[in-house]
Image 1 (spheres, rainbow, N blue to C red):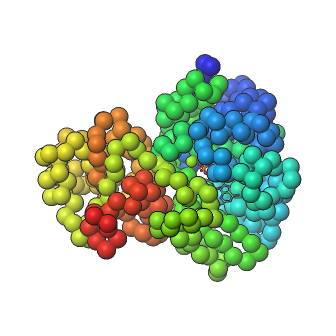
Image 2: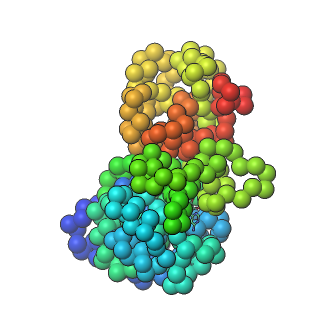
Length: 347
Ligand code: AMP
Ligand code: MG
């Protein structure tokens, strides 16, 4: 199959209409959102949704997120409640995915047989228009091959999906750079299943009763079943072995300088450290205090490290809270909990 890679903005009506027709007809299209690129198709088409799993090599028990263009469209696919609308008023459109009981119209192939469905209303203008023009909700996971870092540019999608899907829309680099915050709600409480740009602290401002699933920060125990099936897979992983350094206990610069003498390794450092690091495979991630920039660049840098063909990558262990929790969660899973230094550490 030939894959078209097309540069677009929200005013490119002709291209977006063609993409929308493909989606409505059950083909797969790569498209930008504010979080990461999605691989979308018609959420009402059971077979089309099965093809998403095939294209990604995604385990069959890991459900997809359904994208809508207006918060109230959640009514058509799920059983909403007052808390949903409170959250929608504050955070939608935006990087929040809400899990609620599903209606029968959503096929089991979208939800991996679960009786709940994950609903998101993106703010990216191209994504928004694509959903509107399709006239159907769009089921879309991240547009990477399963297990690889999520794509934050159209090139990443092309690298993974060339020859597998008919069209990729190139809307430039994603603003946020990590996937949406995923929460499960009932009438009065929220469980945070995956941290993203909408933080625990922001959710607390809307609802008193917010808890964080242990799978966000801890390793699953043998046989333990997470609330969000995606959390059980080693995810976001580059080919090289990633190690995180807890710099409360280990001096980052001297540690990586020592290792670079003998190892084929890349170093993901803060911008202000770059000059003091002797490795020639430097991946500056952003200033120490600029967590948003670091988050935005994370997956791109993990892919870049693989292009450098290194055996190991060293990076800072991010803070375990606030807007840093999303970075912490992605990195701790990408490194399979290999932390150097500190009480958290295994090594
Ligand atoms: P992705 O589309 O790659 O961002 O992955 C979607 C994430 O949402 C995965 O971690 C899924 O396990 C999770 N998810 C989607 N639907 C549900 C659901 N009904 N219940 C729990 N988790 C879900
Ligand atoms: Mg994904």
